[in-house]
Amino acid sequence: MTFQNTHRASHSTSAFFAGGATGCFSYALLAILLMHVLRPDYTPSNHMISDYAVGRFGWIMTTAFVALACGILMLLAGLARSGPASALARVGMFFLGVSCIGLIVTAIYPTDLEEARSATRSGNIHTISFLVNVVSILLAVALLSASFRSHPAWRNHQRTAIALASLVVLAFIFQFLTLHRGAPYGIANRLFVSMLFAWLLTTSIHLLKVARQ
Image (cartoon, rainbow, N blue to C red):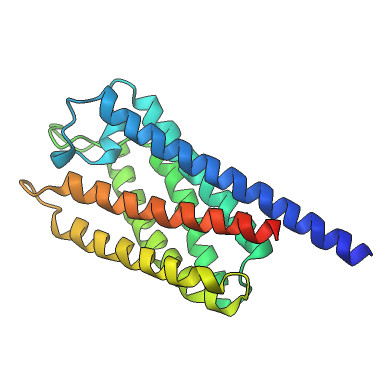
């Protein structure tokens, strides 16, 4: 009886984390979409999403970064309780945690706009955190997607997770190839972020299903 109560409490906590993660990701996504309306002067083709944290209504973009970090933290906590327990999954969760810390740094230190006369300390730190975030999140989604096969409750989600993880990687390659003046790097950035949100949201929703079963 004690084991059953503990088991129920564990899944109840996982459901809380899953719901919190889904809410945080949804807010971050809506905040980013809102910034496109509030700052039409930032043309999507030649402005990264991070640019929205600079200038008017920048605080909204900052809260989006914080919400994304909180969502990843909650997803990480839920996966630790109700996700795969393999070594592959643990390594994936580690990189998910690294990206969470990196996003807080990204929120604290705004980027430099392309037209800025010189690089600032804040901009340099933001660039470093961006690189850390991208590498960590790529490793996290790839490793976690591969690990879902080892857990019966996650096996039916693996195909979706791997498909979305593959799109995240392809979008990153497109992003990397457009990182030069004159290229549509802003569009590539939005495509990468969109694929990432798709993976995060579908994984959080599946975690909620697992926790409720």
